[in-house]
Amino acid sequence: MSNATVVVVTSGKGGVGKTTTTAAIASALAKEGYQVCAIDFDVGLRNLDLIMGAERRVVFDLVNVVRGEASIKQALVRDKKLSNLYLLPASQTRDKDALTEEGVASVISELRMYFDWIICDSPAGIERGATLAMRHADEAIIVSNPEVSSVRDCDRIIGLLDAKTKVAEDGGRMPKHLMITRYDTERAKTGDMLATDDVVDILSVPLIGVVPESKDVLKASNVGLPVTLSDENSTPAKAYMEAVRRLLGEEIPVTIPEEKKSLFGKLFKGRAA
Amino acid sequence: MNILSFFGKRSESASVAKNRLQILLAHERADNGTDAALISSLREEILAVVAKKIDIDPDAVRLEMDRDGDVTTLGIDIELPSARAS
Image 1 (cartoon, one colour):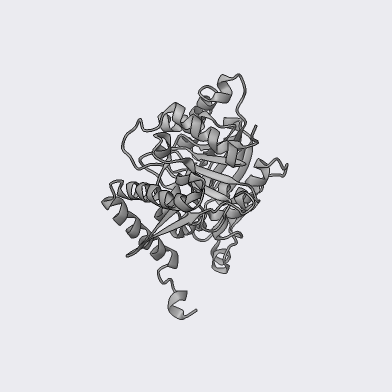
Image 2 (image 1 turned 90 degrees about the vertical axis):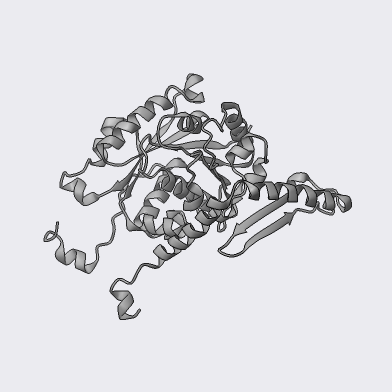
């Protein structure tokens, strides 16, 4: 029996930071020394390869593996920096039914033999791709922005996690973690943005991390590095690394790393805005 | 740091992003699965040649492609059985 843990990163809504979170968490776990595989389930619109900087080296993909056209080992793309981090890319096919339930089940069960952590990047929506991404998960990371539509969609996803997954069908309860991204401390303080406590209250899912809105996320994606690898001292990197320690079972209080204000920022604070 | 870069020259990472996208999209627009088919057949043939001399595990042959602006490189990694095992 393997000790692998399969984690789905999901949200319902698009553009909240699932792929950024998947890449950041997967590489932070790899930096801790674990064997890690990140899988992109967004068939037709893959992007995890681009965020992880592996796009030039993709040959085979998840659909090739499911159809038996390539073995898993051939399709896995090794990270250029961390030799214990791998990516299983999604396919660019337009065929919506390219992934089958049985195919995904066998891919996950084979990956469980090679890896300690398998991080599944879910597509947006509640269609087939999203349900297949969560199907075999042992735990879920729910990504939300502090914004009404994102929180509402997370609530629908939580419903699916408790109904449509293998864990749920076997009578278990899927452990869930809430990751709040694009958080703006200043705006939450002034009451212009939902605070972390508000989101936790509404969704009743324990918080695993709060990632502040940061220009470092865009910068990291520009150069194709997960934000936890591009600049370890950036606020999002710190937030993700803290979240990983919690995922590994450490009980530490959630802090919200803050951007250091420039001298200009301090001088003009309160005058602009 | 010169005075130009101090006053907001275009960020370095944005030009990296543009370059990466140009390379990627050029390949994606042109590709119709030929890379995968080529790699598959190359792998089969290389495996057959090597297997004549050495007893290897089919899974121990890895082909890696790296597409750059003008050049695409192909890396072949063959794990040889250790002396003790053979």
